[in-house]
Length: 389
Image (cartoon, rainbow, N blue to C red; front, side):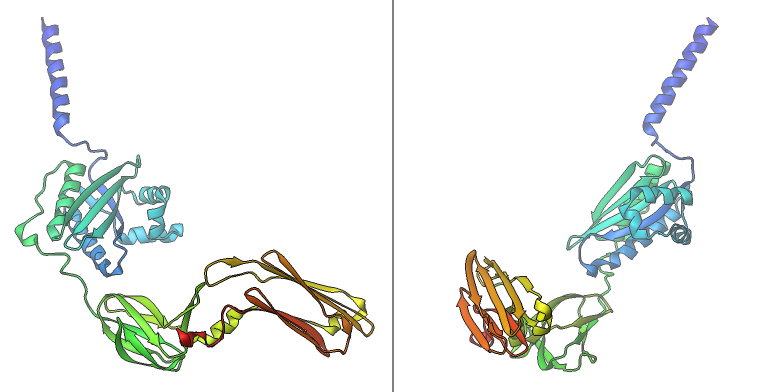
C-alpha cells in the first residue's frame, strides 16, 4: 500500500514538473546571461539615417545593462579581441564562424546584431541574438517612431533570456527617435581647372569656378541628403557614348550632416574628346627598324562602336621592309569582313601619301624621308560637331 502511495506521489510530481516547464521560458544558459553587442546596420541605403544607429544601440544597451541576470560585455574588451585576432567589426557580420569564435573568447552567451530600415514616418528595427553555443538565432522585430519601440524589443529580449517580465515602455518614452536626426548643414569643396565656368546646385546658379585646380569653390550650408552639381562652360563638358552627345559636367553628391564633401570635376574640351575618339590607329615604322633587310609587320584591331551602338569590326596589317634603296610597304585592312589593300612600295626617298574612305573610317598612309606611317580615323564624328547640338 505504501509503495503504491509513493509511486502515485512520484507520478504527480513528474506531471507537475512537466506542466510547470510549459509555462516557463526555456533558458539555454545559466544566469547571468552575457551579451556582446556587434553592429547595428542601416539598410536604408541613405547615410542621412546613420544617426539612428547610435540611438538604437544606446537605448538597447541602457535597457539590457540594467536588467537583472543580464550582463553586457564591455565594448573595449571586444575591440581588444578584434585587434588581437586582426579582425574588423564589419568582418564579423560577413563571417558567422568568426563571430562565434570571438564570442567564445569574450565569454559571451549571445552576440547581438541589429539592422533598421527608415520607412518615412517610422522605422522597422530587427534585432538578432546569435547563440554562441549552438549558432541558433533569436529574432525580435518592432516598427515605430518612438523610444518605446526600442524598449518593447528590450522587454522581449529580457523575457526570452531570463523569464522575467519587465515594464520598460512608458508615456514619457514616447519621444520620437526620428526627430533627433542631425540636420546640421554640410558643405562641398568643388575643384575644377575651368576658368569662370558657371556652377549650379540643383539647377540653381551659385557662382563661378576658380580656374585653379588647387583652389576649390566652397559651397556652404547644404542640407543633408542628395544634391546635383553641374558645371557649364561653352565647349567644355562630357561626351556620352556611343551616341556621341554633349553635356555639361554633372554629378550627384550625398551630403552628410556637418561634413565636408570634396568633388573634382573632370570637364574636358569637346574637340579634344572627339579628336581622341577619332583616332582608332596611329603608328609609324622608322627606317632604322628596317636596316639589314629586316621585315617589320604590325597588326592592329581598330574595331569601334558607332553612334547607333553597332560594333564595326576592323583589322589592319602593315608590312614594311627595305632592300637597298627600295622600300617594300603594303597595308591590308579588313572592314566588316571586306578586304582592302594598298601597295606603296618604291624608291626609299620617294614621298607617297594615300587617303581613302572605307565605310565609316578613313585610312591614311604616308611615306616620307625617315619613316612610313599609317592611321585609321573615324569619320562618323568630327570636331566641332557639338556646335550643332
